[in-house]
Image (cartoon, rainbow, N blue to C red; front, side, top):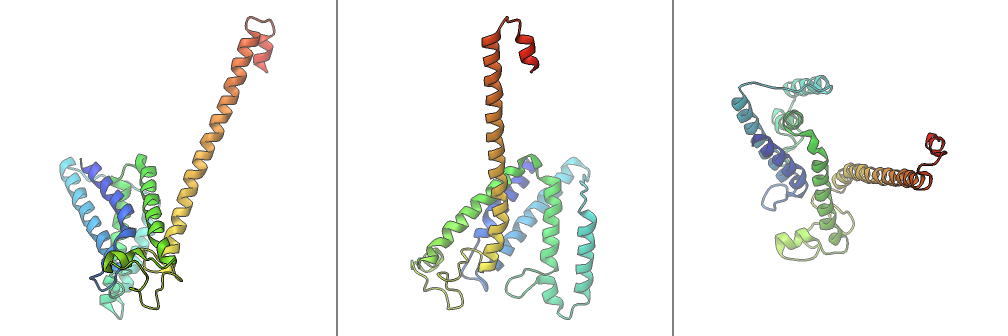
Length: 238
């Protein structure tokens, strides 16, 4: 039950994080996404504690990234301790609550929770969930390129681009639900390679299926034509 719950929470994390927006906050995009990530991380942490309590043991899987990640975390703790702006170093850039020590610890925790709690047999399903979210992000952003931004419609009931100030202009700088064109580009580039993985996988399956079909056909042809033949032995040796 706990394992299924944590898997579901990771699916939510990959599906909804790129889509989360809310107009009544200091920052429309990133702040709300990071708060959602913190919420999911807390729920996963609670589920992990329940799992440890139920099993009466702490089972921790080691990975080759453990030491580099812990060294990186140590450098961030040290830099935070000597920071000239302790608040920003802890919570990140003001108004966004991202990029500080708190968010870094959250990302590292999610990595270790993923390794220890998520069933890696379902990794492809998780990647497909990410692609579904990507598809929604693309569909959400495209109308803004033609002057019909969906965010304006949801927040102000106006199907146009007038809700954005001049520095945004989705018709010139497409950002969809990510807030900045470079953030959108980074997100799409990651999922581009995920989509390539599934494309090449399907191509490989298709090639193997055709190859198997070819050999099955040749085998059936040989059996039919040369059954009980003196030459069968030599033909099948070939």
